[in-house]
Image 1 (cartoon, rainbow, N blue to C red):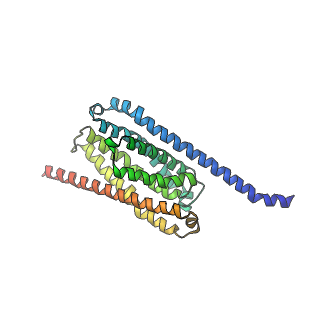
Image 2: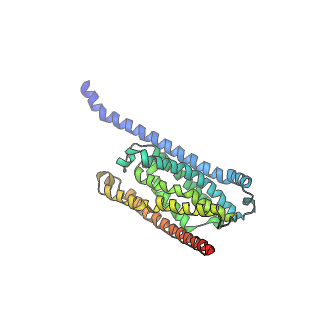
Image 3: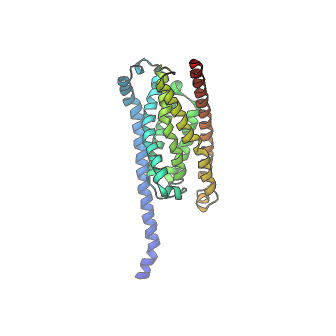
Length: 273
């Protein structure tokens, strides 16, 4: 009997592991679904009413700008929630940092699940409203993110690397606020516009550009390890290829931010002179 129980231990352990993984997957699936529905609900029902009440300029916008505005309300909410989770995990989640390929951490995976649901909804909104807010770079960005985050949510792999990517959302509210200011005709020489612009540039640099060498150095450290090889060719391909494409897009966006900041700084300097 004792020998029989010993033989059952590995099997029972596998069953327990399978149940835990199934429970984690269910949590992530329902989180993604809730995020997807909430994003569409915000776009179609909440933002048009909320925005009309808080901003008189919203009602004067064209259909295209109203559509863009409504997508950014959901974008801001998503960014605040996800960046809080990712920053917490980046600083305090030692398990994710020490086991970047695969670990039992749930919070990082939930954060990515929220993003997956949001990006899926936002992608559909852009496709449906392409004549108003269609943008090739944004569509490519969303497709790459969906491809990469799918494996994180479904398989629970690469949590550290996904979480580092999530840190990029810290800059999103400032990017959106810059657009809001422009949309309602806020003067570009105002202190609020200038402060937001510099904070936007700084947060974009620190959370997206400066994180690139840190990210790829971590990739270098784990590349060739047993855990990395066990991911298989498909996941490894999407892991690296999507990161390269996303970083090219981020560099392109950052050059536009820098050019805008330099142009604004020069105008302010000329005005003082």
